[in-house]
Length: 225
Length: 309
Image (cartoon, rainbow over all chains, first blue to last red; front, side, top):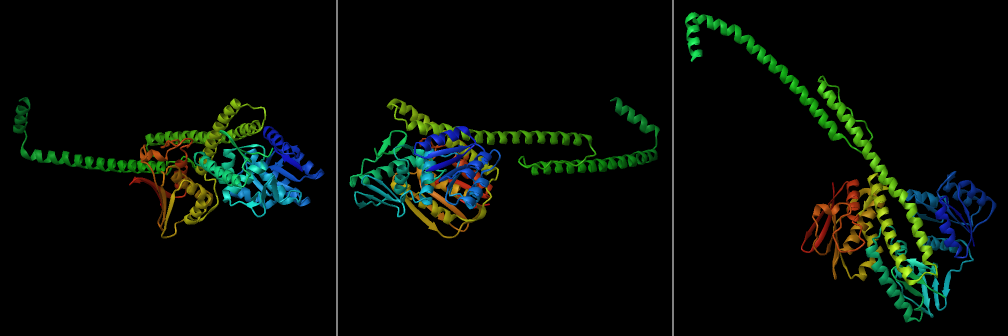
């Protein structure tokens, strides 16, 4: 999988590159509009992550260009512009997802995976880890052959952790993933704890109890190795 | 004594008719002069009053957040012109300071966003490192916690400044019932885990012409509050009529004065990590959307009522 990341803030760009390279993607980057424009024209990518405020031009134009000549690539916009109108115009121009800054790297990772899954056939519609199978089309989870009865939130937590497998995922990133920006930490952390507890119980009942690890004070980890 | 003697002497020198003439010739002009003066003074007072009134009115209409220049009428009295000049200068200065202040808060919170995101990102990367020991992990957890706190605080401040600058343009007729139902759906698990009972009493439709985004933030904040400040086996009651929307919940009495409940950074609870900005966001949104919000505590029940202005 080949990604292109267009972002002018060097520190942020480095962060994304480090995080995404570890996922096994081949990553290329651009700092300016022109640099991004050249790369889009000369190479093909499976997914492009594009910042809107770029020196030299509006990132939306790049989205437009990319859509016009290569309909296959997934596009994720990352931007500090966060009004509903910005979102709508981003998605109408052809982006597959719109992530507002600041965001958690695990969230970006999960979004890119979701976009790639929809765009390409290389990603299977099922995630399989030993006896555990997550079917994303039907939003079903099967553990050792038995279908688990999960609530929507439990399913979302499991999928989010699985998409960031073998990485520590912080509680606040889970909270933001589940409830959006304006959720109070004090409330949400208790609920994440309760959800994970239930989830773990349901998994353990079907001999799949070892996947979810607690990282004390920080968050959780979906461990496969 | 001397005056009495002088009066008797004068009286004996001049006859009575003389007095009548004298009185007439002196008194009539005096009266005319007095009345004339009074009329002139009265007119002048009238003018002064009018001008004071105008100044008062201009000051009353003055809005620090509006760029329109404040102007006073030219006055025949130099003192008023001086006062006006002084006021115009004062207002310009207040406006200047206010704008600078506003700009600073806005810039500061926006400028903080990127460094905060970078710190958070690097913590996320550090967390993945296999070489970190248990003790280091503890430190990292604390760094992370506080960075999160900072970044939540920052985004709340950015939100507040956005509400204050009316940056939400998605105005439409918002049906509070629909929004509440949507939020309750989202919080369903939270509510059931805490075993909070939800009571609904919908008698009408409460519709408000406002930003939909703000309506969502407003109601989500209220419902979160009602969950957080609840007690074991508690309840949340939502009542809607054509005229008002109210949400009440069981809970312990507030420790602070009611007026200060809506102020920034005030918080009344043992609940940790609450920012104390929630209710001031609620209040801002209400003000912006021409809604009135009132709080009361009765029979071990917190109640917030929203009515249209």
